[in-house]
Amino acid sequence: MAAGTAQAVARARGRLRSLDKRLTDQLNRHAEGRTLRPEFRAATDALVRERRLADDDLHSQQQRASAQASEVERRKHFERQVELMRNNWEQLSFDSRQSTLRELVEKIVVRDDGITTVLRG
Image 1 (cartoon, helix red, strand yellow):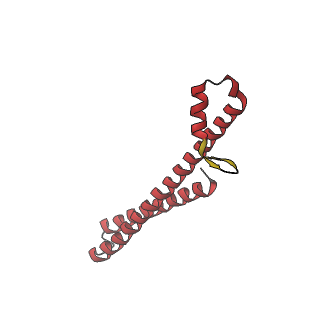
Image 2 (cartoon, helix red, strand yellow):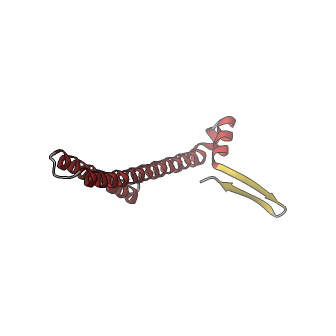
Image 3 (tube, one colour):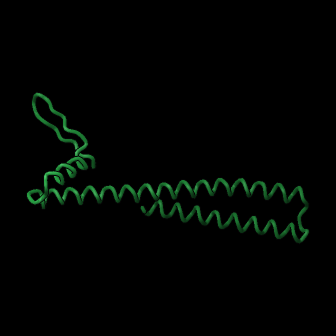
């Protein structure tokens, strides 16, 4: 997980903890009779809305972190496949060569003046 994304996830979790504490404090004040019902309702409605937004933000940050981790894994797999081709081409079976090339090559463009190979990475 990238440092920026990890910090964003930590901030979102901290915000949720803070909102949960504020909501608990509101509930305790009301239970002790220190707030009137309309005041309690307005305060808790606002906190619940803010908590939903914070929860959505945390979910988005976690999805972003997961996507980054997947991208890192995809790149590592690509690099391993390139190394496999470089170091073991002669020892690979035809099927292994073919599947490795299919994983690495996005497309091959053939023109009158030459051939261009476009890799996926």
